[in-house]
Image (cartoon, rainbow, N blue to C red):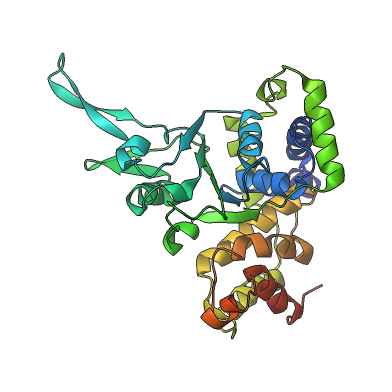
Length: 325
C-alpha cells in the first residue's frame, strides 16, 4: 500500500512529457527566450496570469500565441486601445425581438487562454473589467454572474517605452498577475538564428507549425496534481520571511501582500514539477521570487530617482537572508 501511494505521489511523467513537448514545439519558431517560455508554462500549470513587458518586436505576442496554440483549448486575442469599452471585453446584452427579451452576448474574454495585447493602452475603466475575472474566474454583467470555462488564463503584454496614450496599471490589477516577465533583446547570435530560421520557413505560417501538446481537461488535471506537491515547513517560513522583508526594507515604499506569498508557493510547486520532482527546493523558490515580486513592490522615491530597479532590491533582500538547505 505504501509503495502504491509513493508511486502516485511521484508520478510526474505525463506532466514532464507535456512540458517537454510544449517547449519543443515553441523552439521550432522562437529562438532563445527560454526564461519567458518556462515561466509562461509554469503559470499555466499554477493557474496564474502573466504580464509580459518588453520593447516592440521581441516576440512577446508571438510567444503567447504559440503557448496558447500548444494547448488545445479556446483562445482569443483582445487588442487594447484608448477607446476600448468594458462591454467590448465582457460582452453586452442584445435585444432578441423573437423572444422580446435581452440575451447576453459574451465578449472575447470568455475563452480559456486570453491574450490581452498592450494592456496599458486601455483606460482604467476597461482594465478594471478584468479584475473580477482574473481573481474569481467569473464576470458580473447587469447583476448576473457568468463563470469562466476552466482552465482560464490571461496573458497580457505591455510596452515600457511608448508611454504617450497609455494608462499605468493600478496596483490592485498588477497584484492579480502571478508573474511579470521582462523580455530582453536577443543576443547577436540569437538574432542571426532568427533570420536564418524565418528565411528557411518561407511562406509557412509560424502558428501552423505548432501541434497541441495538451487539451483543457489535461491542464486541469495537471493543476490538481501540482497542488499536491510537497513543500516543507521551513520553506514556507522562508517564503513568509522573504515577503515580510519587502515590507520593512528601507528602499521599498510599499511591500508585497500575502497574495505574493501564495504566488511564490504555487509557482515554486509548478517549477519543481517541471524539473521532475514532487517536492519544492529553495532553488525553486529563488527562481520565481523575482518575477513574482517585481510588480508587487513600489520603490521609495529617492531610490527610484537613483535608478535602482526592483530586481536589484529583491536581489539585495535575498542575499541578506539565510537560505534553508
